[in-house]
Length: 443
Image (cartoon, rainbow, N blue to C red):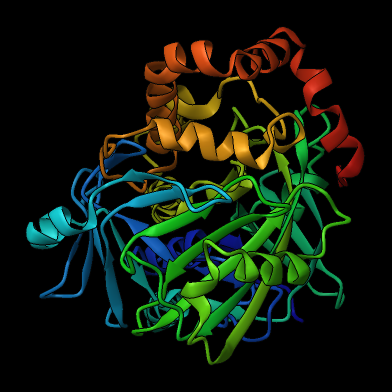
C-alpha cells in the first residue's frame, strides 16, 4: 500500500480497539484500525459476553440504560449505544461435583428489585463491536481487516507497524489493543520480564434447551476434571457452556460430556436440543504490566496490559482514554503538556494500583482436594453471599466465607487445613511450576 502518515494506528479490533477507533475518529485525528480477522464483528473467541453492572469496577460505576440502549460510564463521562438483545443476570453461583452450591446472590430476591437488583447484563458482543465500528467508520477511521501484524519499530517521532502481507502503516502513535496474547507486547519484548502464570485453554458451546435451576445467574463448577462455566445468552433457553483448564492435555469436549452426564447436572441438559455455535481460545497468562506507555509513542489498552479479567467494560474504558490522550497531544501543540500522562496516571490509579499486584496463587486445588472435599466445603456455607459478578469481589467473598467456616473444618476435616497450609508455605514459583512447564510462554 502507498505510505500514508496517520496520527494514530490501532492494532486489534476487540472492545478496546474499536472504542479507541471511534473516539479517535470523533476527535478528528487520522486513524488506521488493523485487525487480523476478516469479519471483525464475528466472535470466535470464547466469551460469556456479559457485562458487570451496578457495582464499582476499575474506578467506574457502570450501568446499562435499557430505555435508550446506552452503556453508561458516568465517572469517565461517556456512553456507548447498544441496540442488540440483552438479558439480566442476578448473581454468581459456584457448584461442586455433587451439586452443592455457594450462592452469591439470591436470584428470586434480586429479581424483585428489578433492574436495580441485577449485577450483570448479557449482550451480543458482536453487535456491540459492529455498532462501535460503524461509528468509527462514519468518523473517517480507515479500517484494515486481514492485517496480521508481524513487527513494530519506532523511528524518531514515527512508529511503523508491519503486516505479514507486506504492508507498512506509519503513524505518530500506536495503541496496542490486540488482547491477552498481544503480538505488539511480545514484539516489544515486554513479556520477557513478566511473571508467566500458565497457558489457559477453553472451548465453549452455545447449547439450546439448557434448564439450570436458576437460569439468570452465571455458574461456575469446581472440582471436576475441567473447569466448567455456564451463562445464559440473550435468547431464552440458549446457554454458553465452557470447559477450560491450564493442562494442555485436557480434552474439553470430553470434559463437557462428563459434566453433562454428572448426576447433579444431567437434569439441566435433559431437553438440550443442539449446538448453535462453538468458540475457543488459548491464552498465555502473565501478570499485569505496570507501564502502559512504551517509547513515548506506544500505548497499551485492554487485555494487552492485563491478564484476562478486564472484561468488555474494563476494555472499553482504556480504549477511549488512550485515544483521547493521543487526540489531545495531536491537537494541543501550544501548552507543552504531556497529555499521555493523563492515561498512564489513570491506569495506575484505577487498574494497576488497586488490582495489579494480586495475591499468591494456590495452584490447582484439584490436586489436593477430592470431589467429596469440594462438596463438603460448599455445604458449610449456609448463607447467601452478596450478589456480584465482579471477579475480584467473587474472590473476596470466597475468602471471607472460608474464614467463617475454618472452625468447622478444623474440627471435622483438619487434613484440609493441613494441605492448604502446606501450599501456603511453598514459594509461589514452586506452586506455579507444573502449570508453567505445561504451558507455552510465547515470550
